[in-house]
Image 1 (cartoon, rainbow, N blue to C red):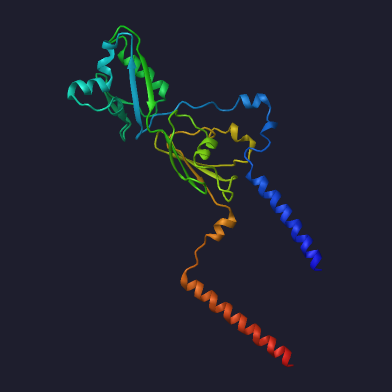
Image 2: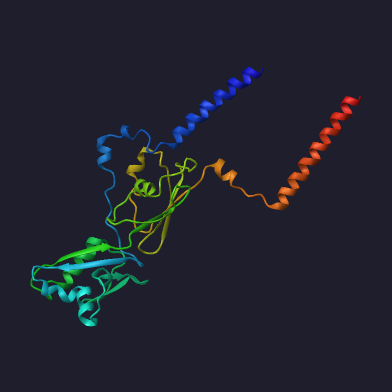
Length: 267
């Protein structure tokens, strides 16, 4: 009987280990996806400007003098004589209503525009009204970041310099999931340009993840990794009163069992 129980325990351990290994692997069997399907995967999105964004707008032309009035850093340096760095002077903070104030052009609503749309808009405001050359306009996000929380090695907020990151890269920045983190039910919370929010569940084990519109992240996305059931259960804190009640109940059961044993042997 003891030998049979040992064998059954060994078999259960083997099956449990196999299941755990299967649960850990990302995008399982992705190699089975046809080339044609992979080519249809979403491209890196053009990021959308929203309130709270810190953006850099740089305007260049062959005749640099002609575009100086439109570059905030030049205007501020000339007006105030400040010695602040160019980086500190050239940023625009999008206000809660989605507006920024640019030199010469004035107050413009940028909320909801993509980077490309904002660049084109600024270009049209300048040429040919103020200058005789089509300027080069570059928009960059200076506070593009995503946050990774939950059952990962290094939870926190991470700044993305190149404004391009997918969910796997973001998790890698956070040191990857702990072995106890659930890979089949990762929560992604996204703030849209209009202030609304989306909350979606993502299965990292699924090979179709690469085809998801949420594979590439947007600024201010929040990723939360849940712990599995065993870790969640082990983290439950038992209040002192409940702990005392459990101890008393356990002692009472033990005493009753002892009495029953004594009575049984005394017969």
